[in-house]
Amino acid sequence: MSDIRQLWKRRKDHRPAPLLLIVLHQGPHGLRAAMCGPTGDNPPVQDDRDPGQVERIAASALAELTRNAAIRFLHEVLPESDSELPGIRNAGMFATHQLKDGVPVRPDWEAMTQTGQAALSKRGQDLIRELGFTVDQLGISTSVLRLKDNVAKTAVAVFLDENETPEDSSGGSTLQLERDP
Image (cartoon, rainbow, N blue to C red; front, side):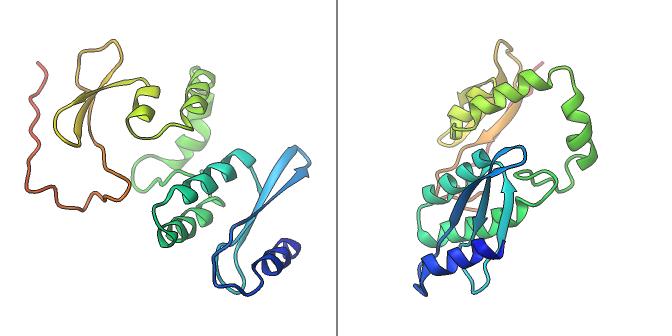
């Protein structure tokens, strides 16, 4: 790992610009990736990562609207890549044990994994549709989700632009849904 950090320092060459260094290497179980950066005198190094995951992290950082947003994104995401379930923020939602050990033994796991793989490149409403929902627009950013081939309302979704946060004011509008009989 010190070799990767030294390579990062040599490439950065004391410039103030952030740098995320990604190194692909052959591991015992195939192609793996290591990441170093993006800032600091002694930047963190994550090794033995799935190259697809690393590529998605880098693409998401590059898609951020500003340099500072990209740096914030990387500082939030990179430490999570060491977790038991990278990419999942499981705060008070489900038992981590069930997500890690129970879900992968379900009979539909392989089919759902393929559905998930196809959805990895999607964003916004395209992602929701790829996961098997139809989207019925209610307002400017509010929609009702239904499972395909089902008339029952399944969920409410609020689609935000890249520069919006859920905390932003929506101009005082109120969302009301009727209950399905």
